[in-house]
Image (cartoon, rainbow, N blue to C red):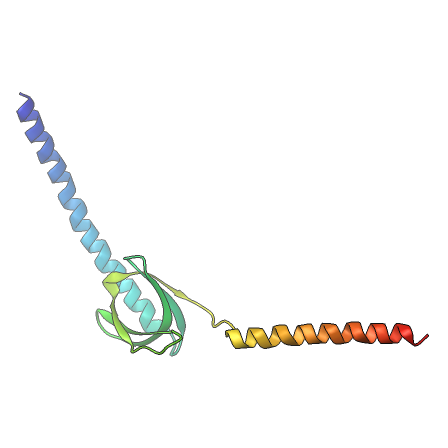
Amino acid sequence: MTNCRRFIGALVVLALSIPSAAMAQVETAGEAERWHDLAERLEPAALISVRLKDGSRTRGTVVGVGSSTMTFAPKTRIPVPPRDIRFDDVASIERTKQGMNPGAKVVISAASVVGGMLAIAALIFASGID
């Protein structure tokens, strides 16, 4: 009797898992179409961040959009060739903003320090004139 219950239980689990697997494929296809539509509507040279289903994340621009893939040019310190990313592999696409490069940050910091030192020197000089 216990073998019969186990067999029936296994059949019930199998019967319940088949529709969910089919629905997962349908949801994935619909999700891929949504990412395709979003990538097509991006303006040229838009900076985006793409997170893939394997957990990796990269920033860059969309160079071209095909039926099932997009050609993506990663923004890296050392230029790399564009690569194709399948819409089925995309977990999210987010628009990002271009930040300041490190050289500009150093120049602004140095100018702030020099300006502060000149202001302090001017105050010391002005107080010694009395």
